[in-house]
Length: 344
Image (cartoon, rainbow, N blue to C red):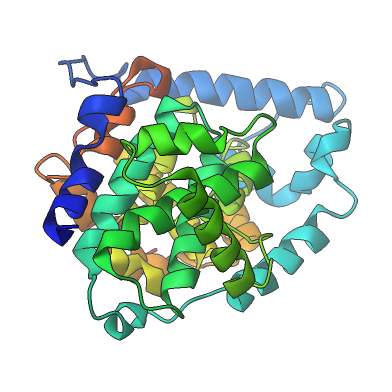
């Protein structure tokens, strides 16, 4: 089997298997001033309800900074049993330890002789389309990428089998995360019958054994959900939330971001998104909950800023086309800022 042909299948399988997606010219969201006013009203109402009718007094300062610092953030979710208000901090303390436990070496691709970082990017770009085709939850994609990297860090893979590794990792992630995961035959179809059912199942077993069945990990998306919840105490709106998600997914294809912790990528994405929307980019509460002061995020934010600006001209367009849809508020059509946020 020709190796180049197989790699071509990775980047072009969507032509036969996936629905076509097109970028349309979409107007930019409502101006930032109106968005901030609406978010401020929502914040005031929330704090008024939680504080027994007391309206927040800004005292001439930014309301988000004063009130957020004075309120125990997790108390705002006391009535939501799924928020695990009593031990959510312990959960995320454990996840911080877990993200270190399952990190891979930033140089792991050097041990591969037949594949490189570009091929990895092509594979992940295709998996983004697969996840969209089968309407998989975002966490499934993040899990699959983590399994791919951890497997490649220990096992040399021929380029003709790289797509097979990706398919098998997506299958494992789907079984772990989805209520109704796609069947094995669906993955045979989506890979344009490049691999047989038995090959996918065999690779699945190899990957599970290599990972020692350690499938519970702390992904960027888990931390991002937590940080966005904190940001919504302030002026973060839905557009900023979707933009943060977009920035995080852009980094999945970038091998250079392997060196950063998932929590660091999540914090950097939110900081850059807030800056893009001209909102206060890093509050005292965000720093406390995330554990990252703004200066510690500068390196990651700077690299993410470069990826953000070049996304329009990147030849891998799956993530950008995905977030150009109205259900994601067309955030990939937003114009990146001229410069990164300054350190306070």
